[in-house]
Length: 538
Image 1 (cartoon, rainbow, N blue to C red):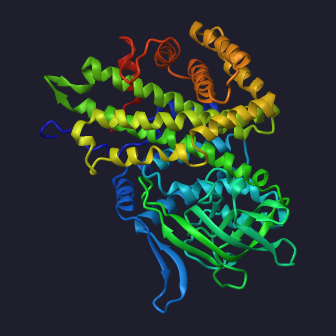
Image 2: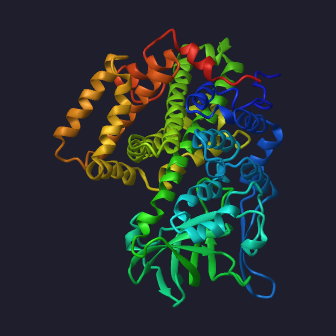
Image 3: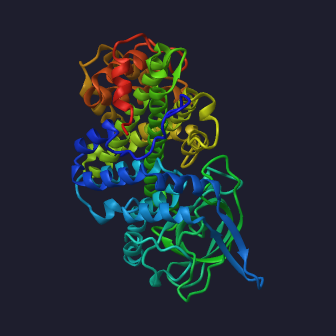
């Protein structure tokens, strides 16, 4: 490569280049999925897949509210690259693998594959994630599950609005938030009026954020006579007519540009009750928890791709007489963000494993609190990790030909979707108050590393003291959850991570040998080892 420019990061295997992911797949009983994730990692590193990501992002979806005769059609048109990304995702079961293959490690296998493919382009993951998450909620209504689950778990991507029974596959979305309430869904005003036929209702109202509106069906919250309830709303009615699901406009978003997020109006749209009337939040919460896991996966994916780009660039770019990666201060930054990425990947896979083992009460309680902790913390860390990785490229990282601006715009999304930082921090407190078993499960997990590092031992003791003595616990929720997240990641790193990376994590995140930005680690001979572990090989 001439002019001191690094070669393009292309034609490499994203899975084989990711040691923490490979190790986690084995550890979480998902080694049976190795070949599938390997093949997906190989495809994700090709120029063709990289081009799909750029093309889908550069050509946002277009709303078509009416046809040329003035009839409402409420359709969204996507660039062909979007459909290619979706075809690969659905074809590899990223929307349904645990439901298709309910075996040990299925959620972990799916998490690894989703993490790898999301590095190509994060936007198309929204309908994939929501379809995966919808199945547990659908199963609360066996008749609906029998009708829809076979379609939602095929490996056939079949876009377009047609009667579901005539399609090879179907995708699910959800519509909860409204303009006046946002995360406070209990303040929803959309009304559900019974038709007199068992379970059938007509929904009237507006939804402020309805992502992927071209999905075949949606889980929707609305106020029924008995209170806030969950409904299944298909885009096409059983008689073949379009449901009265009207797309008002598409959101002009900071990032996530390839995905369509919309404002919709339900004008007596036909829907069927899911679960018990008046228990809508309780019914849909399984869907929320599964999509929260995907927020952690998405954040881990963004960090990994950012670290891969930064370590690759600096290994080939020289300044002031030597490679950037060989300069002590740059090495400090690279190692720091690599450690953060590794801790997040291991946490992501541990949480996915808890979904696999949810029949074990201890694992179920750990999942309850662990997902909220992970969602709060990792989504925030992704933003700063991507920013530092971009800066490692200098001006080359700031131009659109680089993937870094896209990663940077995408990074804040996961922290907002399925509850902002405050919502998730308060959810951790709610779990501790309502399910004290979740706190016990959390400490049981963290203390598996007791005695391996004195800094973690002190952190655990301090955390217990803080929880026991805190008076203004709500105002301090972020501090408490941050402390819980760091202790959990440190425990996982000590037990499962690279030794040098674990030592750096504990000395910096727990031991106070750290500043307020990345790249402020204490000098260590282990920095280069960490960087090389995370640098992709062409």
